[in-house]
Image (tube, rainbow, N blue to C red; front, side, top):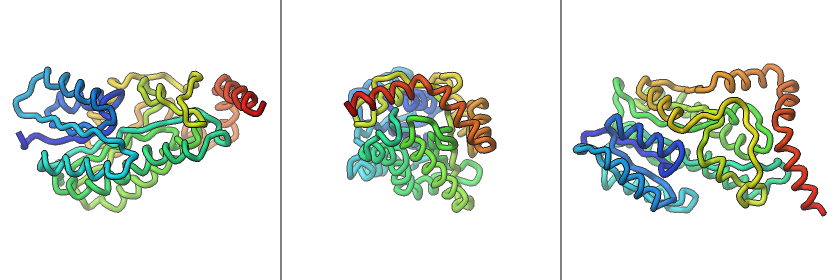
Amino acid sequence: MMNTPVALITGAANGLGWALSQQFWQVGYSLCLVDLDQQGLEARKASLLEMGSNTQKIELCTVNLLESGAIECIKDTLSRRFTSLDVLVNNAGITHRSLARETSIDVIEKVMDLDFLVPVKLTQQLFEQLANSGTRKKPATIINIGSMAGWMPVMARSGYCAAKSAQHQYFETLRAETTHLPVNILMVYPSFLATDIEKNALAGNGQKATHARSTIGNIQSAEWMAKQIIQACHSGKSRLFPSKAILLASLFYRWFPALYTRMMRRKFKSELSVQLEVQELANH
């Protein structure tokens, strides 16, 4: 049983995390599934076991990744239940929909902590185990779910853009420093997906955002994204840009930033109007 490769996935109970859990299970991985939702994790485990397997194993780790001790709990679960770690998927995340100057520092800190610092902490704690599991022919893999928001500004997502930018820079630097080790880093830059991250987006005051989001390009399913990530992982890719239109938009921003900003304001006009209306009501 312990000869099967092992993947650890954060935010595994829903959305892209759940889609990735299914994909890794179907190609023969044992899983360590991490999420805050215990009932959700248990339901997902039952669904996977119904698919059948005589060699794979599933361990659940119910933790709030923002609380102290969460990373140690995950590490302890791995060391007790598995002898290797072949894939680490830093998927758990949160976003907000609020104007930069109307977003409380508590919201900014929460987004930065979960989207940037948690992946860094988890990677630092588990890197040695990953390096020991990997080989030159088959390196272990760290998969980070980034965003094109880390490459270009997106209105009403200032904290999210900052967190994903920081994630990009940290892991690209880590890649440069560890090319001699059997660990590959796959940076994934999706655009807009039909997942719970937007359903659970925060407003500037920390409550759940109630207004509709604006989007750029097509909204793809979590299943579609997960399949591309699995393929990129197995082929040893370093970066995955699943939406060519969004990739071109990021390059357009670098070449023509003023024009990009005008076009973005036009695209996000309806959301900006809602934000300004909320701001005016609060001021009165």
